[in-house]
Image 1 (cartoon, helix red, strand yellow):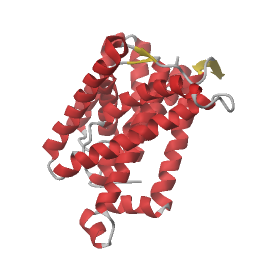
Image 2 (cartoon, rainbow, N blue to C red):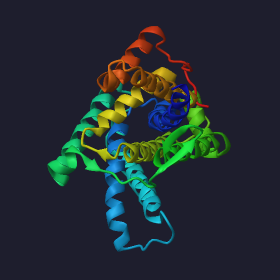
Image 3 (cartoon, rainbow, N blue to C red):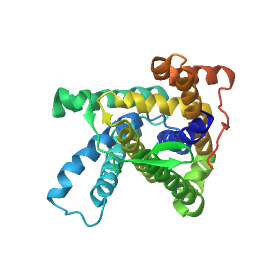
Image 4 (cartoon, one colour):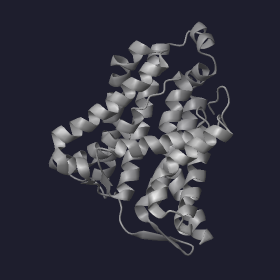
Length: 301
């Protein structure tokens, strides 16, 4: 049993981490609690499936899996553009007003949820099938793992490494880190706040979209309420790891997945308890350690 928890939990936890990183990044750099990452999580899956259906009519497959890979990239880029527009049109106007930012971003999630109903109808909004990129299973030791789950974990690791390289080695990434450390000092150093906030909004929406595609390709479906799934996982993991910590989001995702799997294997409340588990984790961590495992006043590794 423990080998299943270790291997399957690690792979699932890595996927969970990507969901949390999208929020931890934008909050860590700008201090904006953009809950619309839940909507981008949901939209990513819908856009992915739409591109899967449309792309073969215009671009023939160039190599195996070229269509799903292109759909994955295009859907995430589309969400990145939407994320930038959403920030510039709405959140930029109310910077510094945390309550209004929370209300506005939640309202955006609900509006997008209703648009899915209007555009796609009840069938698409209730449970829309998502095609995995790869099929079959792979044996890791004595544990059988779905190929799609393993692929999602590997993509997440690659994204996480690329993000760390971007933040630590590039001029723009260093500017983001400077903003997370001291906003006023960064402004005095000549860093363009507005441009950086737009860029981090794009990256955050891109990552949220990517996490939504990878997550729903494992579960096999998406609905108009999937933004709540993404948001609940995001909050529980970033609160566990620390709101402004990318490392915390990664470690928090692993711990969360291990605990969730142990509950399922032990039969404690089964799936009923697991659905409320993110909120239970959030409440317990907020009571015991409000800053999370790696939370500090500011932290961007």
